[in-house]
Image 1 (cartoon, rainbow, N blue to C red):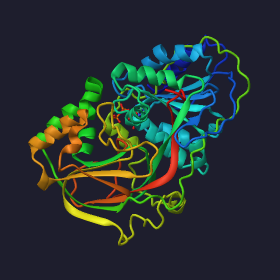
Image 2: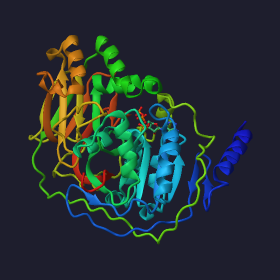
Image 3: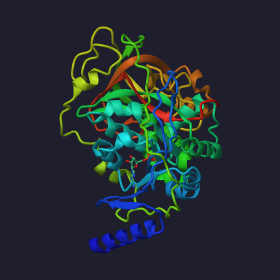
Image 4: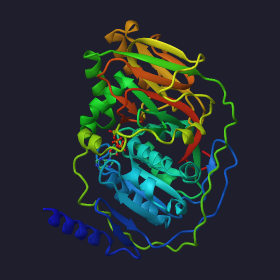
Length: 463
Ligand SMILES: Nc1ncnc2c1ncn2[C@@H]1O[C@H](COP(=O)(O)OP(=O)(O)OP(=O)(O)O)[C@@H](O)[C@H]1O
C-alpha cells in the first residue's frame, strides 16, 4: 500500500512538471514542491509611512501555499483556474506547495533557509495557515526581522478569512463574496503593490509562546467556531450561523477569572514597520506551467481530530524556554509571566461568563465587523465579554444576528474594554480556548501587545 502510494505520488509529480519550461521538483515524504527556474526583477524599497509599505513587484519569487481542504475545498481549483493565468500574464516566478496536513507550513517556516530570498509568501486558505506561518517564523532566531521583510498575500479560500477581511475593510474594499476573492487575486499578483502593517499579539500558554494576529475566544463564540467545523465543506462561512443557532439553544456558561491591564499608550515608541524586498536577478518570462498536483500522501480528510493530533500547538509537554525574547517585544514593561502574580494595575473579574472574545482586528469573517473600533496596525486589544447574569437566550440570538449589521455593539451585555494585556483562567472545564481559529490546550492564557507587525499585501498604493 505504501509502495503503491509512493509510486503514484512520483507519477503525479512527473505529470505535473513534464511540460513546464524550466521547473524542477523537490519532494519530501509529506509534500511535493514545484519550483520554477527563473527569477523576475525586483528592487529594494523601504516603506515611508506607518500604514503601508511599498512592495517592489511581488513578482520576483513567490512561495505559494495552497490548503486543498480549507473552506469548501476549492483552493487548488482557485489556484489553477484563477491564479495561474495571472501569474503567467505577469511572468511571475513561483514555488507551489500544496499542503498535506496540519503543521507543515509551521515547520517549513521554521526550517527553510531561503526565506530572505522571497518577494512574498502567498497563502490560499483560511486564517489557520497564516497562524502556522507566523508562528513558524517567530520560532526562528531571525523570525522577528523576517516579519519585517516578508509580505503576505492572502487569497481567501478558507471558511474564515478575518485577517484579509479586516485589511480590505480598512482599505474600503468590498467584502462581498465574488469581489473579495477577485480583489485578493488581483492585489497578490500585481506589480507595485503595498503591504499594510498588521499588529501581532504575544500569547503565552502553559507550554508555549505564540503570536496571534486576529482573535482569542473562549465560551460561546469559540465553541461555535470549533463545533461548526463539521459543516465547513457544505456550508462554507454560513456554518457559523448554523452553529450559533444550535449552540445558543443549548447554552452553556463557564466560570472564569478574567484580568486585564487597561490600555495605555506604549511606553516605548512603536517601531515603524519597515518592509524590505530583496533584489532579484533580472527576469525572463516563465514558460507554460504544468497543472499542479497534490501530493498523494496528503490526507483527504481535514477533520478536527487529525488536526489536533498533528497540531504543533496542542502539546503541553514542554516548558516555555524563550520568555525573555518575547518580553523584549512587549509594548508595556513589567507584564508578568503567566505563572506570576499580577500587579496592582490589573483589574480582575471573577464571574460566570457566556463568552470572552478578544480582537485586535475588526472582522473575524466577511460579514459585519465584530469589533468595529479595532484597527489593523494599532497597539491595543479590544477585549469583550458577556456575563451569564446579563443575557437571555433570546437576546443572544438577536445579538448574534445583529453582528452582520454591526448593531450588536448596542447590546448592553456586550462589554468591550481596551487593554494592553489580559489573562484568562477558566475555573470550569468544557469550552475551547481558541487563538486565531486554532484550539490551544492550556489551563490559562495571557495576551500582551507587541511592537511586532506582519505585512499583508493590499496594494495598489492608491485605492
Ligand atoms: N492538507 C491538509 N489537510 C488537513 N488539514 C490541513 C491541510 N493543510 C492545512 N491544514 C490545516 O487545516 C487547518 C484549517 O486551515 P484554514 O484555517 O487555513 O482553513 P479554513 O477552511 O478557514 O479552516 P477553519 O475555518 O476550520 O480554521 C489549519 O490548522 C491547517 O493546519
